[in-house]
Length: 209
Figure (cartoon, rainbow, N blue to C red):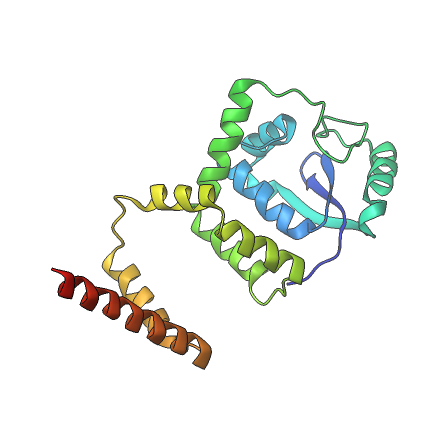
């Protein structure tokens, strides 16, 4: 699902109070908001308090303006000045939260909320639907490939997998996915060459012994 950058509003239907924000992907941002708010770790304390008090059903989401990325700040500031949203901590719009001081407890709560949000089945499904079929730019693909080859990233992945044992269901899914993969002729040739080289090294070692 592709979407354009824009300014969005999260409104409390019971009180009329709202929160206004900007994002390159507003609906994806809404999914992220819901994840942190559901677990009590929203980045905006006013919105979190209202969410806990009135419940998720009391809130609606809508995109107010669709614009170019370079216009986000200008439109957000104009809308905040006009609507004066009650839940906005910062009324002077900036490109990030830089300059807004968060307590150590608040930062810990945000981090915990992000971790828990990734475990929420509904949110995982929403994120998966959003990413499915979304084309990646050559730059994005190159960045992903570069990250996979970074030693520190590889070390973190290995450390996270140590001691983990996939369930029978997960192993079955992995097996099906592996069978569905069709390697290109070049890949098969490279695998075959690697296997021959490995066997040749073993043969040489046996002869030396």
